[in-house]
Image (cartoon, rainbow, N blue to C red; front, side, top):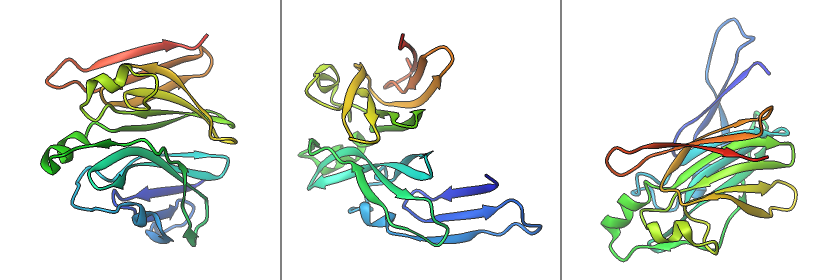
Length: 196
């Protein structure tokens, strides 16, 4: 409707009521910052936000344990006073890095884009965290574009072999999913996935 929501990278949330004559930022209390367990990892922040059926879906780099990360989704019902986020897509699987400095670089390739499919499903990208072999392994979630059922949380692989897919657009009338991703040094790519 006529509200603009503003999410800051580390979990602060504000909204603007566009119907008001004087525009002002109003803060919403939230627990979202609780999901960022180690703030010195600069990439461990909100990656994307999608609204489906009056709920926020927020993706972020999740530190599962010491030097072991994945890309997860938290959700909360839209409320203008306070938002109590709960983990929605929280895979047990994570990628570990023995060298903490290397880990900081690798979590930049985390993907995290959410795209609306329909009222029961979303598309979700997960990067390969600069570990290319996992992107071809069907038993790993990394380096994939997933379809996630919002009712039962079941997911299936739509596409694999990705490095860091951060752009995603679904053309409903054509049943085409377009993704863009970052390569190492140049060589970025656009993928067109025909879902027919």
